[in-house]
Length: 227
Length: 269
Image 1 (cartoon, rainbow over the protein chains, first blue to last red):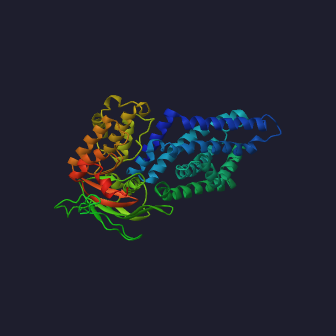
Image 2 (image 1 turned 180 degrees about the horizontal axis):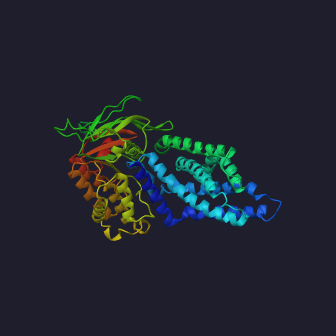
Image 3 (image 1 turned 120 degrees about the vertical axis):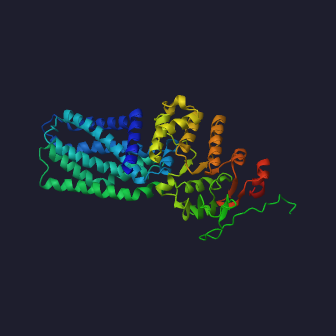
């Protein structure tokens, strides 16, 4: 029942997004613009620049900036017609509502990130397929961290007039640890260094962050939404 | 009887206690031989503060099953705040609310409640059928497709079943909102100004559904400014003023004949 309710919310969000494409269009365009602008700044064709060394930072900068745009819409779209009240009055737990929204956000972010990974590979002439499974694992874990924190802060700021500003202000400081881990791992993987030894520690950091903060949000979300 | 104003009836004016005290319980909708019945709705000493401002002060009452209660009061009196607390959308600063003996935030309790707030609570990007199917799934409605079609038929929306809500007229959206609230056949209905801004057709649909609910012994609490509709529908009235219930009792013939009587008698001008 719990999972079915979460899936119902996720399916509703994905269907609404598919019909309006308001979050995807803005976020994907922003993600690609960031990558294109940085390609002008760093000149990927130049031999003076080690693109692999900065590639992790570039990618996750684009991912996290664009994610703020998409995640802002997550709970804000429920304000139209007071839909949030109807959801909170229905017999669905706040955590199932959270997971439904988080699953939909995660799916959207992953789709956009995989598209922009391909664009990044072409623009910067970086081979992403050599360590693709490790790279996918890092993107999955890092994106879940962004999704959990972003969805939670989207719920927290939903009634604020300055929510578009407040969400990134609150979200980015909380993502310092997972973004550091994801950037380090992504740069290593694109340099051809596989996930083993010291790198595994960063993977464990990402897993621990995801588990701890997902659990924390499940505990806090009812208070966040109902007060 | 005083010559300076209308005589007050002997029904139960509520008295608020000092902050922190549990106020006197006002039975609303009490029926003869129903003493053994569990209250449909029980509100005990509810206070709600916004900062230092007490929006609700020591609200306490019971609503018996089968009653239709019109919650009256001027703008800012606390009606919406009280209804949001009854619906579990806001937590009281003090006090408690139970519906059929259970905490209102329990999922099993919320399954028994229907809530219609100020907004229509429908998704513009989804069709009428998809909107109702979403809420049917959340409420675990049995035979959902048949029930959805029945509600679309009762609200005269069958022909636009697959149309997106964003393409609907205002009246159609309002009727669909009514269909959503009644979809899971709630035992307790909480309606916040349900007649406001409805067109004639939507009012007729809503009144027919409310009458049906009343006949089947469901409990209805609605805040409203539409005194005529409220008095025609209600079995009981409660008047709230500055966060306190100042009158609660049966709807009498004098209220029906003169809808302004209650405000003149209990209002603070």
